[in-house]
Length: 349
Image (cartoon, rainbow, N blue to C red):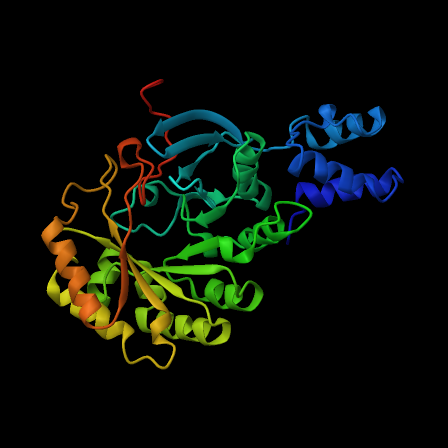
């Protein structure tokens, strides 16, 4: 059963107090135009209404509390505490052109156990609510940062959390965050029901599929989800997504030295993506440097430049669009696969 977001609860409170229709717009303008995050500071509202909102929803609009912030060049990682004491992490990326991008979490931990991912070693504690998902962005907004784009590539598998779709409604609501659908990216390891629903309900949202091996046996070893949602079935769902939306699908591929970075792997990735149909040009491979953490096996290491170059050249020679992603934040464990929800940092280790 769907739980109500704070924005729906605010509307309910206004209705129960027989407030005029414009009150909701006053509140959303206070939050999203004037960056006011406490009901008590919304002085355009009657004192009785401010008191009632604070009493029902708490004095702070946000349900996530920043605990530790770590920064490096262009990257800021924030550890948030939730009301029940759980911890999640979110990352802000500042690009030199002035673009601000965010990587946010959808679950506390993750239950899918991808072998190379720090978050997967925690196991799944619980899904985040729509408010807990969107409040990560609300924190950055209230702190004065522009919300240019957001990706669900933080802790958890976004498409395994049904609250993701409620969060997408909030993020794209013109009265609230007002984010364009094309500025949002959802990443998945291949949750078929979620892919189908995203295609149907949010066709313009960007979709990224984490591949990491083109070979079924090896992919199942690295990513146990492959036994449940086999690669070929996922690829058919992605074909359908492209055909119905006309949008690119991004293929994320973490390069692991000596494991999945060989010429044979590059050939197999090209074979997987070619010959699918007239839409195959809308597949785009993003090669990602591997980021080691204390929580992941030492046997996984980053590919060397020679193998990365070879992989790129081989894919390009087969007509595959490919980009090597810039690595941000690995020195503060804020890069792909490194989010762990720990408050161990230089300040409180």
